[in-house]
Image (cartoon, rainbow, N blue to C red):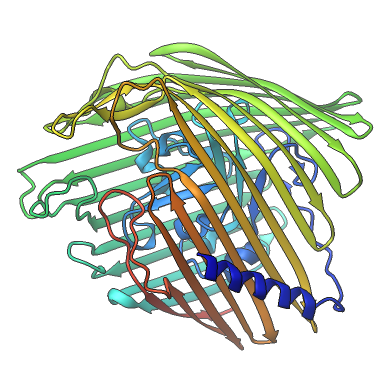
Length: 600
């Protein structure tokens, strides 16, 4: 770790020295989207990270799970290559406490948070990614316990047709076709289909993935539809028995229709949506009758959001009503009705102050109604320097797996109560045309935390509201953009520290909750020195609460020649042996060669 940091410090110093006399570049102010009050990132009074389309194009990551690991405070624990089965954590929260959205549509799953990342899109279809850290329940509802990630899909700006081919380690083969057609200012369509297969990097780690994404714009209506199917060997994903040879298949579908109406000082945004997830798990791949779990969950919803602009600022109202259905051979047939309503107001006419306060009301047919208030406050010291703070109450109802799952080694608990937390954050932002710095301190006090626990290693894992947990930490992010000659260069450096403390626990072992990123350091450098060639290198150091630590280096080189783009992605260049979750070793050094042809 010490040698790695020395190299990075020397590298950064050299870069800054060499470019001290070069012209600077004005950074575009990014608007962070919201279902109600959207703001430029500089005006928000909370920590938000944005991954732009340029960063996505340059990154060595080949999928969303790998890309998110470069963000301070975000922990993606993978069980294999290409994000095959990934769990999403923010600031020490677990995978059930992090909300994923696609164009503002909530992708939470009533069965289990393990399925959150089943919905991830190809990087080719993503315009940007917005990561909201800390209490976000008053904005999005109950599942945004530790934070939320909103995937904003591609804008349809021109006509294009392209084909992409990829081949890499472990017989990893990929083919994708994408088309965009903008017929006029009121009608456009985007379609993308991708197929990827691999023999796997170890025994029983093969996979076969299919992904389809459609987006259509017709006047002020936007329609999105996606389908993701994954079939993969799940060697020791959930057990330690080498004789089982586990296997899993998942399907995830989304269909949503949204619109936007503007009436002088009022904006009205209605939406209907349907999300479906299917999961089939075999304990023995070659013997399906030995043990098989099969689950289908559906969520159908309608929502309406409004923003009213007045002399007092911006006022947001929203309501989201959904019906959830689950059919499962293990969890039974379940259903619940969920009603979320939102109110928030931003006072942005207080000279250098801004204040946003709000409340969400979440009502579940099988749990008590909860009120989730929150407030954000900011003060502009100068036009570039801002201090901010926020506090919010959040909670999460148990998933159906928490409540009802049962097998010889695990037992759910139908008497579970929702877990809750109060989260606070204070921080500072310094933003200029070519340099951004954010620093924040955060704290979360969680009560009735839900996890799988046991007192001895011979007992069953059982879910329970086992304790209260105090999570403290800080994070800092630096972005510097500059020119060398005529080309833009980009440097990102991030650090995150988390300290968890269990109060008054009566259990000895927990499965998921307390293996946070105690230390997380990431750095990436995107460079371009020739018109046709660009390169990127990224570094990540991780040390977890349980003591494991490792270093990872990834790199990418790409060249554009006429209508062709050739790329080489190299991951885990140092051949690091490491595990992110359970007993699943991650692959050592591997590469992917890519070829893209733009037909028009």
